[in-house]
Length: 299
Image (cartoon, rainbow, N blue to C red; front, side, top):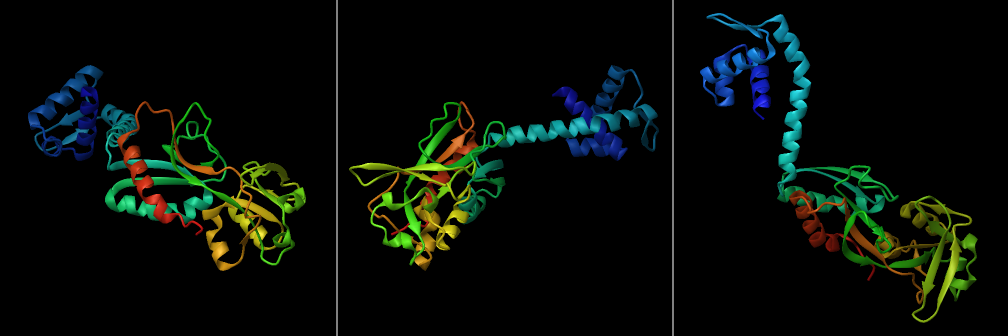
C-alpha cells in the first residue's frame, strides 16, 4: 500500500497546496511529504508541483494526473473500508432479502433493535416473495419461509417451524364443508412464486390427500391470497402468523381443522462462506433471539 499512500499524499497536496498542512492531516513530517512527492515525480518522470517559498501549485501535468487518479484512489479507499468493516461484528453494511409480508410486519422491529445495539451498522433490504439467488444478486443473507432446503450451493440455518392452515371467509360455503375432498381446483387459491397452480398435500395424521389448487386464481403474495379468501373467493393455505390478525379480527376462519400440510421452515440462507463474516454472524444470532417475540402466532 506504499504506492496508495503516496497517491493519497499527492491528492491531498493537490487540494491543500500546502505541504505543512498535508503533513499535519496525515500525521507525517513536512520532510516526509516532500520526499513522497519527489519520489512520485521521479517515478513518473514529470514535475507535479511548482514550489516557491510562499506557495505550492500544480503543474499542467500534475493537474491532469490528479484528475485521472482521483476516482481510482477514492474507489480503493472505499474498498479498504468495506473490507475492514466486513470483519467487524458491530460495523458495516448488510444486504438482506426478505419475503414481502415478513419484511413489512416482522423485520422492522428486529432491525431497529439491532441498529440500537450496533449503531454503526447499515442495511439494504430487498422485499420479494420469490426465491432470490443470493449469490448472483449479491445478498449477504436471505430470510426464507419455504419447505425444507435442498440447495447444495448455499448454507442455511433453521430458525423455527412455520405451520400452515386452511382459511376461508366466515359465512362462505367453504365453512360448511366437512372434508377437503369437497373442494374443487377452482375453490383453492394457490400460492406460487411463478403465479402458477400448485398441489396441496394434506394429512389428518393418518391418511393423506392431494388437491390441485390455483386453476382459477394464484398469486405470489400471501397478502393478496388472504384478502381474496376474506372476500369469499376461495380457500387459501397460508402460514398461521401470516393471517393471525385476519383470524382475530374475524375476517378469516380456520377450515378443515383436522387437515394440514407439511410445515414450512423459517430459515436464514447465506452464500457459501467458509465462515460467516462477524457482522453477519452477529445479526443472525440477534435475529434468532428476537424473531419469536415479533412473529404473532395463532393461539
